Image (tube, rainbow, N blue to C red):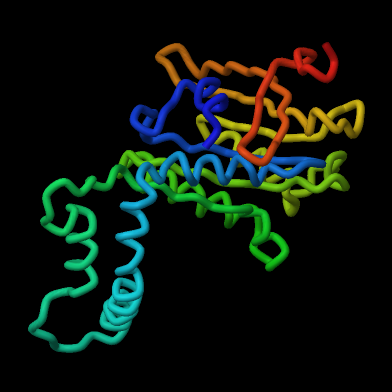
Length: 235
């Protein structure tokens, strides 16, 4: 988790906006470090997550049985073990002092991969719309999605089958975007690229957009973010 990025976004693991759709994209760079940030950001307590993950094998197995029972109905007098197990996990299993789960989070690492599998961009936008309606609106959870834009599509002629078209469609659905790209001047050892942060807020008089540009450097213990031209490498 990057504390500097939390400061930029004005969010902490204990205080963040619910119901947000966060879009991460990259071009001529790698935004995977932001996915790692949001993963650790929403996993407030790794020890709690580790303890719950030990029961995932049982949940998965029972979940398959439940799915098959829906497709192939069978008479049964027993309750749903999968639902019961998940309910115990979500409320701490009845043990005192166990942290309760927060709102749901859907994290999709590189949704643009589906384009290479033959899924149309329109179908992916429909899927994203229904995910946002369920996770963000109904459950007041959050979505984080990564889209990679290929360099050869930068001057696209308007085709509706590429990652650029998918990105444009997702931008209209999200409330926060972080677009990572390489430096216009080329490679720099001390500055790995720049990220444009864009907030979109709906108000009574319409939608308001705020943009800020930062440069960044990824290192072993995290990442540093700074205003353009303020890096120690150029001062």
